[in-house]
Each structure stands twice: as C-alpha cells, then as structure tokens.
Image (cartoon, rainbow, N blue to C red; front, top):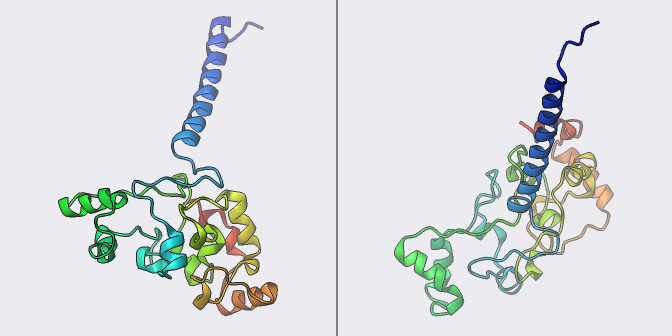
Length: 214
C-alpha cells in the first residue's frame, strides 16, 4: 500500500506538535511568573506599606471599612483614597511613608494597591455567597490582624477550594463571627453541620464544575 503522507509532511507534523507543546509550557511558565499568586509566606510589597497589624489588630478597624464590597460583590474591594484620607487628613499626614498616597489624593490620581490573591481568568470566585454562608475572612486570609504586610497563608488552588466545598462544616462560622480574628468554635463539627442546615447550603452542588468554571 502506498504511503499517504510524505516523510517531509510527517516530519513537519511532528515538529508542529512539538512547537505547540513548547508554546503551551512557555505560556504556563509566563503565567506563573507574571500573574500567579505569590508563594505562601511571602509578604506582598505595596507602594505604601499598609499594616493590617496596626489598623486591624491594634486599632480594631473592621474589615468592611476598607473592603466595602465583601458582603455584596464578587470582589471585596480596595479602600479608596477618600477612605484612607478620612483618617490621614488628620493623622500622620506628613509621614514620608504616606507621601505617595497623599500626593495621589491631592492630585486626583488613581492609586493602585497590589492584590495578594490573583486567580486565573478561568476561575470564577465571588466573595458575597461565601460571606453570606458563614465563611470567615480568617479561613482563607489567615490572621491578617498580626501581619505587618499581608501574605498568602493558604493556597487558593482547586484542591484547597474542593477541600472546603466537600466538607463545608469544617469551616463555617456564625455570620456575626465572620470578621472576628482568632475566633474558634467549641465543637466545629457540630456547629458546622447545624449551619449547613440553617443556611440552606446545597452541598451536592458545591462540587459542580460550573460553580467556579463558567
């Protein structure tokens, strides 16, 4: 039987497949370098070194004061310059560390904070249903009230998310305790199972692919 494809065509096909694999690998590496989340334990440097330890731990500022959309939006929101200057128009206004923030406010320029968690575009995450169903800030973000600069304490990988979605009772809190740092239940398993019922959480749907990949 005559050969359908010439040796040159077969070679070109193999080289094309190899090139496609190399491009895919290069793309993954580029994403890891440029867009992937920082490694756990690495503090994320900001233009202004905002200290959660000082603002939350020492001064007791509620998470929602700066992250105003966390209960209603997909993105928790970052503090506006007006929010920051609500205090710093009176306190530490001349501090050198705050100079970039003050200058941006006075000149009407945008001020960009660097995000700690950067999920890939194919992952859909919404803060609102998590907050509505008893997931505390500390569960994913750790004890930010002890962090001079915020760092990642939990990898927001598919495995980490599924660990929670498969057994939400291990992590749920009463809604009034969601923003409390260091809070612990006396019997988390019993409390979590009750909250799953009380909040009407459909545990069967929590592992549906379309929930996070739309």
